[in-house]
Image (cartoon, rainbow, N blue to C red; front, side, top):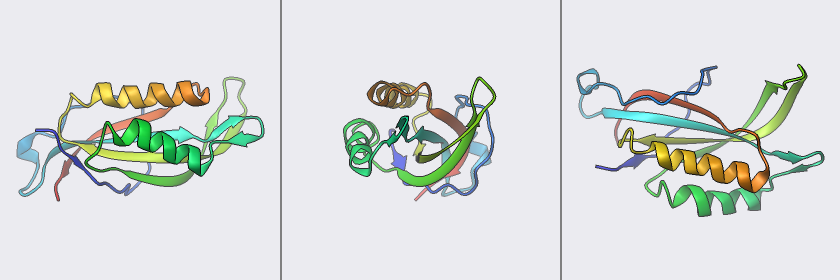
Length: 138
């Protein structure tokens, strides 16, 4: 059964992106159920002096994300940094998209489609992705 839950990020951690299955059913106390939390970090710097605007982000969210995850999601404004291949540290404003899915691993193709659409639309090299098994419920 495909369901998505509104989620809030409780803590940020440095994790390598991976695809996981949901938590074992025995590990979730009722009424919670096994699920996967998907965190996607979208950098907003797209040209030397230009960033994705709020209107552009809203259009992307509506056209690419909401149609794939219509049951709910959360978006947070964050600031991040990363090391460039040449060793420089880059800092930028970002959007953190959090989706909790109950259809693991069927969600994988939808998540990848969102990532691919953002990279193509804004000329990005990557979208950082974190997935972790969780217990969730409304």
